[in-house]
Amino acid sequence: MKIMVMGTGFVGLTHAAVCSEYGHIVYAYDIDSSKINGFSTGNPDKIEKYVNEPGLSDIVRDSNNRSLYFTTDFKTACDGVDAVFLCLPTPPNLDGSTDLSFYDKAVNDLAKELNHRKNKKRIVVINKSTVPIGTARHLLRIFKKHNVDNIGVASNPEFLAEGNAVDQSRHPDRVVVGCDTEEDFKILRRIYSQFVDHVRIKYIESTPETAEAIKYMANTLLLNYISFWNGVGARIGEVFDNVLIGDLRIGVTSDNRISTWGSYVSNGAGGSCFGKDVRSLRYQMSQRGVDTTFLKAAYDVNEYQKKYLVDRAINELDFMFNNKRIAVLGLAFKKRTNDMRDASSIELIETLLGKGVEEIRAFDPLANEEAAKCFNPHKNHLFSRINYFTSIEEAVSGTDALFISSDCEEFRGISGVINRIVKPPYLIIDGRRMIPDCDTLVEKGFSYVAVGSKSLKGKNK
Ligand SMILES: NC(=O)c1ccc[n+]([C@@H]2O[C@H](COP(=O)([O-])OP(=O)(O)OC[C@H]3O[C@@H](n4cnc5c(N)ncnc54)[C@H](O)[C@@H]3O)[C@@H](O)[C@H]2O)c1
Image 1 (tube, protein in one colour):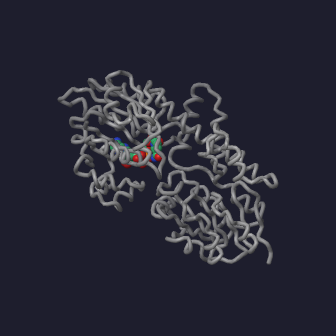
Image 2 (cartoon, helix red, strand yellow):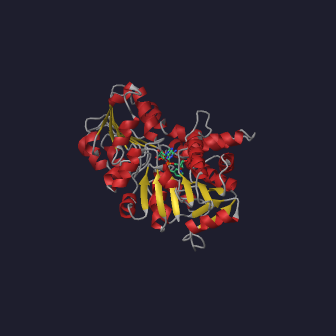
Image 3 (cartoon, protein in one colour):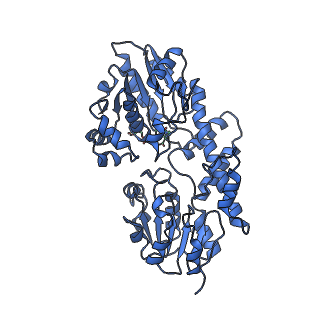
């Protein structure tokens, strides 16, 4: 089949690459010509500059010029197409509702182009982005307004998690498809033929609205679960004596009704989706008169987690951030990605600079470059106090405290490095509980504050 993918971000590029592996001819189209030029080269550095996902640049390189074509030429991409996947941004408006302007623009362009097509075979336009419930029907109305014949609009939400996108696209837990007609279901079944009747992967067919709702319900439920561990589990470990958060987690999740995923306490979950989707669902439901206290709580707990450790260091260990040098390890929203969208490090660094920190010495194995764009001194002059380093050692050197802000493997068990590079009194703030042998550091005079346990003041020598 000839498939067009509109939008080559994290979702679109991954989907285009994996679809080409299924044996389809894929035209990946984006309005951002620098991305398209980079992807067309097949050069891993030029691909990973935009989307850094394990294994993705290999597929792009291997399929380029065979079954995967990158283009900014809309006509070529649309010509003779069987299906169009929309993988476009759906950012939040200030009130939490979803900004559908990228969608409206893209679909109007598409409608005009498809209206002139000679071959009037059935085409399905498929939403892969996370869009408000009812968007597929809204798009169908746009196509009807432009008198586009023989077209269907389907919903096929994406569930991939960044850092593992290729693997999850090749082996998803489920494929959810919402269509209005059997004809459209058939086209989707041809696209995903290897997943239909799969022994392990659930292939779920329903209405477009149900498919849209499944995505929101899944994401908000996941954030609720994360926030429950952070807002209840972590607090229990922090305020009661002798409650060990690791054992608490094992004890609770040993019940096979309770998931281990999401049970790790942290300085908040970031990424482009959770916060935005919870706010959007809240908006959609409150517009229909539903009380959304539950969704608000999940969101608020998550935001609180991103910076509350700074206050704990002040209140529990009398640490003053004014004029201090602080190392921040981990800038992207999680390990194995360079994606800075809604990363916990953003709230954290803004909070630290607001407390008068003199220098932030930052390190992330993949995201330094993206972080430098995000913390642009032209947006906020205080960002000029951030310097970026290419190793943990360099970032930590000469600092008064360090903050572990993401779960990169490199940060696990770094007590040896700390011991070697800095001397007590020194404060370690651990947003990911990465230092299991923190007691030995405390014995040496280092102070330690971590999510999920009581603060430990360094022993005086
Ligand atoms: N990133 C994730 O982990 C993830 C997971 C599941 C679902 N989603 C959802 O998928 C959607 C896309 O997310 P993303 O992270 O890939 O976004 P992204 O911002 O990385 O990519 C979007 C791309 O669309 C392009 N674009 C904008 N307007 C266009 C147009 N008119 N024609 C062609 N291209 C256009 C942009 O240039 C950009 O490259 C969002 O709704 C998001 O919520 C994201």
